Length: 422
Image 1 (cartoon, one colour):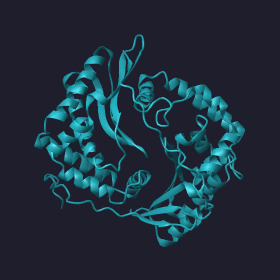
Image 2: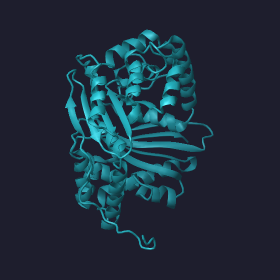
Image 3: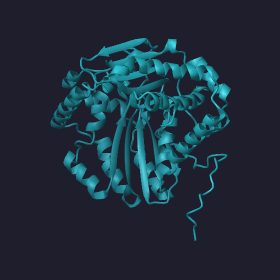
Image 4: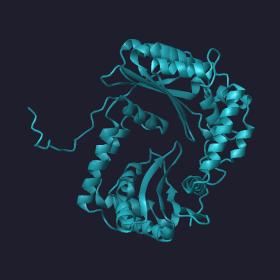
């Protein structure tokens, strides 16, 4: 019998044992990653299209096209599609960022054929009904107007503009009134250009006997082989050192501090992830101890390395009490400077190693988590070895390397600072 008074032994693993995603290129050029893992009769399929917001010529076209594909097809109305999802227990989800649009379905294995039938209607026969577009645009317009009243939302938008430039594809923001310019023709043209076989890759994970894999391959074969549309690329960035928006009577200030660095494939990205974790990547981090526990300026603060297809950036974010705005900025920069000049104590580094590796094991515990990591790696051009490379970096990185990376890449003189509030 298990003695629950005895704590189980704890150890950091020497390596990560996770299923490797197997990849194949189909006859129409689609790359399919397959992850055989899990013990439950569940399957998740994600279709990742190069159809993010930087590809649109009219504001909100990319997100509207993605969201309205499921709001009416050649055979089904939006209500009928929702009823089918409910009846078969299908989870349907979409997400979009600057670079990619993702369509994901999860289902019980026995309902895979029916799930793909419904998904096929959405992907191959969307109608973009004018009435659904009108409802969608009206709701999103009102939501955006409400969000823009929040300092944290405005700070995020200004931070992107400050890092990349207001006219840069990664920094551009749009006015709510631009929803009025959306038309069915705009959505259809975007759909026909970017939702094609030459412009996607797919990741399937879960309970995957050969028959299920063949069913999914047959579904993907329905996409016509096409030459992918040209990637417009991204121009050079034009950062701004300080953007500050004062709001009368503000009780809090939303702060963003950071700089453009490099994408995930850069040799220093993994090391900088460790440095960002030490600074503000977990609840007991240096920024949390200083600004929350010691000073009481904020309930929460974090720092992170964030990745995009063509670049990446370092960011610190927090909402602080208005009266402490300038002091909070000063303390953030003080902690950055300490990271640049003082080697991390061995005990602190060991704790951060444990936290990062534990979080990796949590994320990779199951087929869907492995699929998420695979998607992220494929998006940024990384290989199957990227996870192991990060694991090895976390285990082997030294205090001096962390200090050296921070000194090289985190010079406060190169930062963009955004403050919305006091």
